[in-house]
Image 1 (cartoon, rainbow, N blue to C red):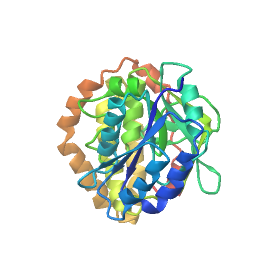
Image 2: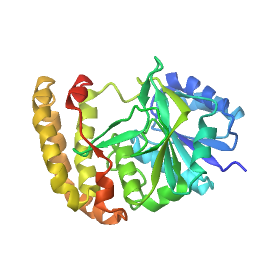
Image 3: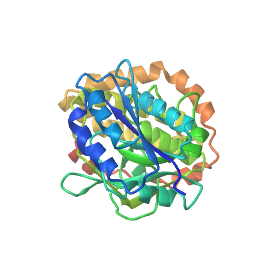
Length: 321
């Protein structure tokens, strides 16, 4: 018996990517799934285009009244998936193409152990090289893409494509949120992965679940906005999730990152963007201290520390922080 899966695709004016994405879903060997297409008030005809695919697949279209970013639309999709009795929820960027065995491979691994809360995919660049193979966690409390093509437990799953167990989503939910809707976009999957680990859930990298990420989808053409949300949301994520016992262990690494990053912010004209991110993060710090009480970790700090790696700053700056 194939457990039911919902595939949530959040879209904003991404019509040019949707044909390849939906065509690849039509070809899935796994058949017990539905698509939940959550649209952020697109103006490019995306919804009308997706309606044409209803003759091939079960698709629920949810139209929102404005662009809510990434977190809230996915949460809306998750709620619908739970309402319609899905056991698993997959998230998928609109600018991706999935292998025909994508869902089959993810579900097979997830079904092998009921403590597996999520699965990470092999996400490829257009040239066939690995974009990510799960997520790494660093001592400065930042994530980075993992690139080792080995099936094993990993810290978390990048948000371009991932599978989540509904039971896990319910277990780590904070109020009405699975992804933290205060974030709007960026760092949501890092935050969710950290919370899931704190609650004792595993994430497994599945190299046979292959996804090609075109990588130039909606949302990548505003570097200042990206930098703002990354830096603001990072502070919120640390505030919410870092064990107090690990604070002084991580603090030197966080400070080192800030010192090394400063000249790059200035050279790229992003100093005031980052400054605003810091100020805005601090303005809502009380809100996130309240959320911290809801996280309720069951994993001791020494287990979390085992996941923390040194950060290669030279590699980081080559990729333009």
